[in-house]
Image (cartoon, rainbow, N blue to C red; front, side):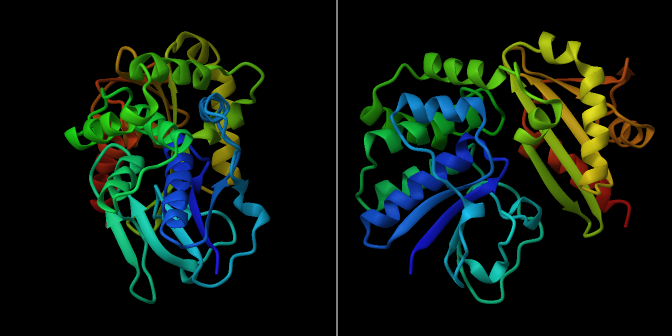
Length: 312
């Protein structure tokens, strides 16, 4: 039976690269596998695939899953699964995020580490099994480590990530920082994009305290002036998405990866109340500035989870 390796909805580079990387590793070890994506690619990921002459994986929406045929990478929460997936399909899980509402009826293989990128974990698995990824796959996983760690500046970065990146770069031989800047520049380009598409490109849904559905979207850019100048358009789009997804709250952060500042757009009094209590900063012209906060996984989600847990 073919195994499908799938990242989260609204795939980022790590979600795509870790699926490609683990599917290739499974194939190298005699298990038929295919990487899939759960949505459209962002411009940075698309550029990386083109640069390294790789085809985009198929969209998971085209696949009918057999029972016990899916490996989840770079996510575990049901709100981030591809549509049509049920937990009985899942046989393995590889991730670097917190565990939310995941459970399984039968024991499954689970591997998680608190590191900067799922691609770092999968790179280590290649080394443990004395395997080497092809150059294109190594390049994608290296790109994922660089982008997920914000060029090693994110607080999620570990020495483990740096070690895995160095090992991959012995295969790829890139100027890592220049390459990462090229990918971030492409990802920052919002020309020709709808506001809803920009928000959904890096949107994740969390179920806090088993009863609050909270969307947290991030847009990382090397130049915040363009997106901030269009904040009123973002407000309209955020209101629309919140209603369509039936969320209790929706938080959207524009992250300046150069200056390491998040600009959170505050769309309602309810979000304003939560953000003020959680982060303790003032809101000016419907924007809360959060210096030094750039990681959703490590700096935004944990205090939100603690806040909602206090409401029980």
